[in-house]
Image (cartoon, rainbow, N blue to C red; front, side):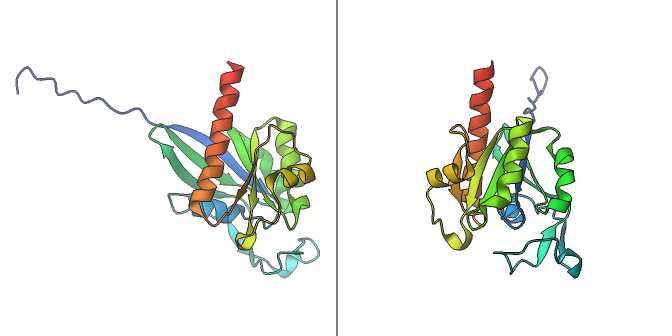
Length: 195
């Protein structure tokens, strides 16, 4: 058609944000990334072997058969304007050296906690506090149980009031999505305060 404007406005690509999912060995990081990811997650799980005997503490997670040896990766679209890239960290102490590289470019993190073994998440909390990376704490309710309220967990972990503590279930997409949205809301609020 002569004289008609056939230019199509291209939609702006969404902003992408790198988020870490961290915590101790066996707290549910791989499960969380897998349950919330809209793509088939990349997993680097390997079977537990005799080589880990005496090194990996399986107390409370005796049924665990595999472990992440590098990272998990997933993606979730929050809106047309925002996509989250999720990087699950390995939880075993012998793989913590990778956390520094995984943290490069991350805007925030979720620290998963297993209330049966809260001490397993102290290293992740310390990691993000020392680097000034904002984080929220997701308390993974194994077997759907949450025996302690969020404030009691905050006190047990000695967390400051500005760190959000959320009860969640790493197996449920909606629960994981809500934790991630809480983190994004915190990051937006922090950015507004800083400007």
